Amino acid sequence: MTSNSNLVLRDQVIQACKSNIKDQAVLSWFTDKLETTETPSAFFLAFGMVNRKIDRSSVEIPTTLLDTFKNIDPVFNINNWTLDQFCRLAFLINLDPENNKGKIETLLASADMREQVVIYKSLHFLQNAEDFVLNAVDGIRTNMIDVFDSIALDSAYPSKYFDESAWNQMVLKAIFMERPIFKIYGLETRQNKKLATILHDFVHERWAAGRSVTPELWRLTSSFLNVQILEDLKKVIETGTPTAKSAAIKVLQESNHPKATDWLESKNIEKSKKSWEEIGHEVWSAIEN
Amino acid sequence: MKYIDPHVHMTSRTTNDYEAMQKAGIVALIEPAFWLGQPRTEVGAFKDYFSSIVGWEPFRSSQFGIKHYCTIGLNSKEANNEALAEQVMELLPLFALKDNVVAIGEIGYDDQTKAEDKYFREQIELAKEVGLPIMIHTPHRDKKNGTLRSMDVLEEHGVDPSMAVIDHNNEETAKSVLDRGFWAAFTIYPRTKMGSERMVEVVRQYGSDRIIVDSSADWGVSDPLSVPKTANLMKERGIAQEHIQKTCYQNALDAYGQSGNMKESDWSEGVNFDQSVLYGGNSVLRGQEPKKSSSDIIEN
Image 1 (cartoon, helix red, strand yellow):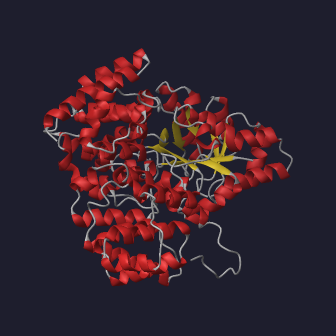
Image 2 (cartoon, rainbow over the protein chains, first blue to last red):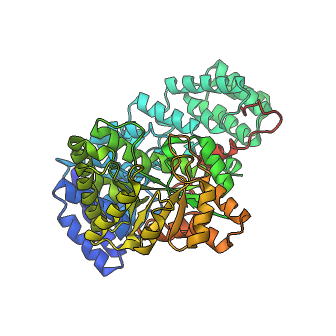
Image 3 (cartoon, rainbow over the protein chains, first blue to last red):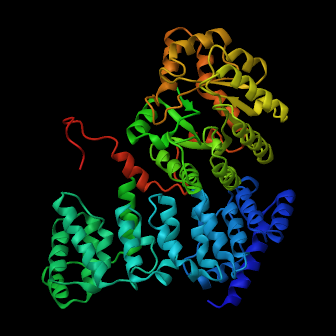
């Protein structure tokens, strides 16, 4: 992204915050603090006070701003933001990118859960988003679900900036933490042999323990299908739950592996027409119930 | 019956305790910042501790359906290391405004030294500045004088008594605390503080206005079920339901609710994670009900 579009974003976000804040006293507090957050302590105090001043209502933004967001992150969704979070985003992107790193790192080190969530969600929209890769990689080591989700789910940041080992660590941890992995952006484009192999080992470890695995994980093996994975997927198709079966058939289809195609034809197996999103929803609604 | 334990140090407790507390009816708790059984030697240890009680511990608690709040402060024991105390004081404004912080505390006196007095007063001013209630720790030794002196200092700084909870009271201190308009908390902690039978008699004598029961359960031999157990004993010994409800639930909510950060709606609909994501929470709670085929079977 060019820095120019980030400047446009900054101005549009601030404007949107202002038009969403209904209370005049709060609005003047917000406007005033945006102009006077030059010293670190003034910034920390203002960022902290958002919690007291601004409520957790939903945010309405114009389509021009939505487009600006989507230019940076195609899976940006305004419904994932409440007004207090959105105003904190404004404070963060309002910092001078020349010296925002120290302030944001100090903030992270003393952040409560809600603040951590909003800081990680905001990283992608900073002019120097790439400078925070190590912070995000460190962030996914958390066991707090909300914090993990704020980095891993519904964001294009990891797929864009994480190197292979960080990416793999994040996906594996999402599976371990039973997160809805269909909400991770870039699963197909970031497929890699190492991840496919680790996942395949993981499946065997779970099966040996008499445990099941989420059917979603198979989609991460489709580009690296080998004979062993093929045999396991056959087993899933023959003995798995209906959702697991659809997932396994879909992987065989997507693999374009001749042995997979032949086997599907020989067994006369009907094509899986479900999207990964639909399969993901099935998996998670089964867990919720 | 729902209970609040407004003083319990959960960082020192296990998930068995959380599970038992939830089963006993505790819906919310307050974890005051205190010392950890031995003095810290680095300011970073304070930072990580504060960070944990505004982040990780609320998450841990939420997995058991209990809403977690905390207080932030430099405790009196560690205030005596002045070089360190100065650095900790600089940290406090960073944490005092967090989402789950309902008071500055626990602060006050331990040995009643000059350093303790200095940081006690500075933190009273901080509480006034950020509009938070104050939780007062009263000393084990020379308790009566320490308690009176704490109240003198609060009054000297112009603190409205309704904004301060004086904790760890006993039969000797209760009357003066209540007479001066402060909230009086009683800690049901075996051997060193109050037993639950004595607590029943305190409520019989003073009623329930501004009286709060807590456990102060921590890393010592203590009981995180002190509040529900005391409530049960009160009931058994004929104390009116209204007094039980006030001392074991409502008064704590009224006192710390003045922070603006503690509301009944935080737990009345169930305690969820921030984004109402239930998957992981469910998976943890599913683990709470192991199949009862044999007590030696640990669920796979």
